[in-house]
Length: 107
Image 1 (cartoon, helix red, strand yellow):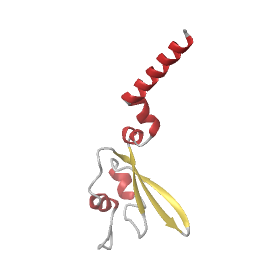
Image 2 (cartoon, rainbow, N blue to C red):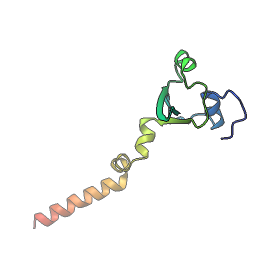
Image 3 (cartoon, rainbow, N blue to C red):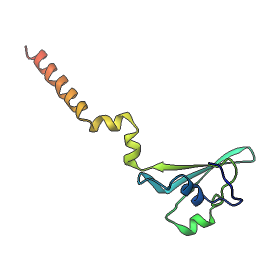
Image 4 (cartoon, one colour):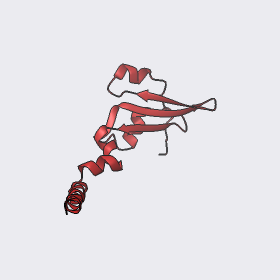
């Protein structure tokens, strides 16, 4: 996003991105910042105003990256294993395999 302001806060950045989705953890916002050639990460809790406003990353700097960690459900939907165990096709395939093995070994 192109920034036109001198002082741009983490709240401004989240607002510019269209706010947080329901799947975003409000207590685990990560800001990646390079300081003296070293990449540092800061975690911000939007639910804690005192911690938010006193955070060294409340005002963003050039090239800061803001990452919102997904909640457990959203993170699980992004992985194959979590989706597989909940899918109907997985269970049909498993039952089909078991019935095939039972039929094969009982002959």
